[in-house]
Picture (tube, rainbow, N blue to C red):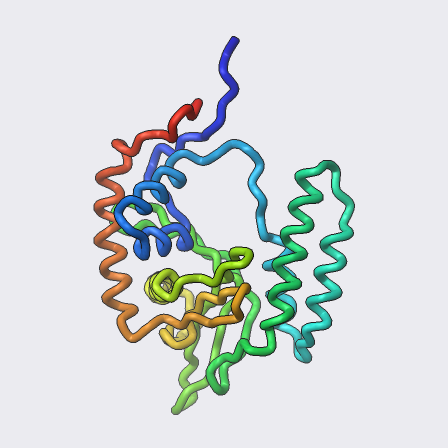
Length: 242
């Protein structure tokens, strides 16, 4: 009898912005784990935070944001119809995410004069042989001196009971900044590091791209060359059936 497949092989180097940031902020041993997880994707159903991210984004875009909106959304998600235990667990996890953010939402402040904007799809970019998928949750914009438009983007992160490390946040926001600079359809606006954020929904901390964003992004691109070279030699998890 054929063994049940446990993992799907990603043949060509590919990582999301989130995992690339985690890779850059990790120890050598943890880096191997990140790469293995990106090359060999578990087939088992994984909990996604789609409902929670949508709720947080709607809150940020609201003309009159009120944490009570988030609490109501959390209850709605928790009570959604579920086909099985997995769906019920997924609803609970998303509801907990939104409930937690409701407790810290009012501490989130953009730089003076900046506003949130709805996001649009972004095509993946290839960095030195690694396809990097990039989908921000919101865009940011402000009008600077001489009526120059400045833009940025925000991505959400959340882990129950644990704040995002400042190093991972700095790398993720630096990658956001670097990738955004690579797009040519930016409405003649200038990308600004101070408007490129990773928002930790657990703590309410906005991690803006630091002053070292350019060098961090360059280091990330260099690391991508190493990742691409090593990809074929990354071994699967123990007992994995591909």
